[in-house]
Image (cartoon, rainbow, N blue to C red):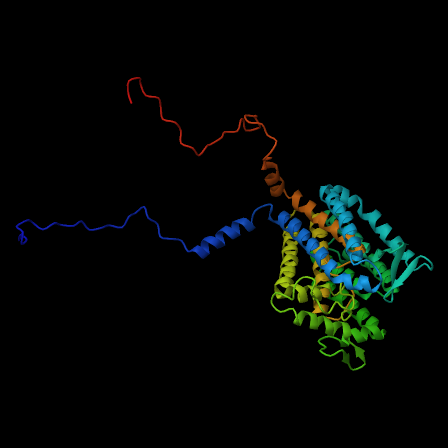
Length: 451
C-alpha cells in the first residue's frame, strides 16, 4: 500500500452504516389524525359533547338574549334586563330538570311517557277554551300563568311525542311486530295527527312542521319501507300545501324566500330582508357585542326567532360558525348514542330528540338566511322563551342519561378516581397508592467501607 507524504500509512475510515435503532419520522399530520381519532373514539366522547355543547349553547344564548332584548324592553317601558332575567330563571329551572333527567334510570323515563303525553294533550286542549287560552302574534297556542308569564303547551308536545313514541316502538320491536305496516303506523300516526290537529287549531304551522319531522325520523329509525314512508310523506305534503294555500299569511312568508327588498310584490318581507342586512353587516368578526344596529327597531323579534341574525351582526361569521359547530357536535353525539346502543327505547328516544333539535335549528337558521320561509320557531337552547327552553333541556338530560348508560361509558366512569379527599396510603380495591413511580429506585446499599 503506498504511503502518504508524511510517510504514515493512510487512515482507513469506516463506512457509516445506517443506525437500525433510528426509525423514520412519522408524518405529523398522520400523528395528529391518529390522536384525534383515538380521542374521538373514546367511550365518554358523546357524553362530553352533549354536556359541553349544550351548556355552551345555553350560555351563549343567554348573552345574546341580553344583548338583543335590551332595546325591545326599553321600548316597552321595562328594565333593560327584563327578558334576560326571565330567560335566566327559565335556564335555572331547566338546569334542574336536565340534572334530574340525566340521573333518572331508563325505566323511569319509559314510565313517564304516558303521563307526559296525557298532560300535554290536556294542556293543548285547554288552549282552545275561551278565557284560558290566549293569542300571541296571531297564534292561539298560549296559556297565561299570571303577570308576564305564559306557557306554550305545544312545546311540551314535542317531548311527549318523543318519549311516548319511543316506548311504543320499543315494545313493538321486542314483540317483533314492526314487520307489519299496521303495527308500525297504528297508533303512532293517529296520535301524532291528534297533536298536529290541536296545534293547527291555533295556527302554529312551525311547531306542526317540527312534530312532522319527529314522526318521519321515528319511522325511519323503525325501518319503515320506502313505499310506506313515501305514502306518509305524500299525505303530509298534501295537507301542508292545503294549509299554505288557504292562508294568505303563509303564502306571503313563502314569497319572501330569497327576497332582497322589503316589498316583494304584495308580500311585506321586512323581517326577512332586515335579517339578511344584519348578517351582511357583521363581516368576519362582527361589530362587537351589544353594537347591533338592526335591533334598534328595524328587526322584529330580534331576541326570539331572529336572534341568529343579531349574533351574526355582533359576532360576525366567526360567531355564527361557532353556533353551527356546536349544533353539529350535539347532533353527532346524539346520533352516536342512538347508533351504539342495544336498547331500542334509547335508540328511538335519542333519535327523536336529535331529529327535533336539528330540524328546528335548520328551519330557524334557514329562515334567517332567506333559504326557507319564516316558520316562527325559535333556535333551540338559544332563543328567548322559557316554554321552548324547559322541555329542550329535559330532552338534553335524556341524551346525557343515555350516554352515561352505555356499558363502555359506565366502565370509564367507574374507573375514574377522585383527585381530592383521599388520604395517603388509603387502600382501595387496588391497594395503597404508590407515589413517585417514575422516580429511579435508590441503589442497593453497599457493604461498609466502600464509597
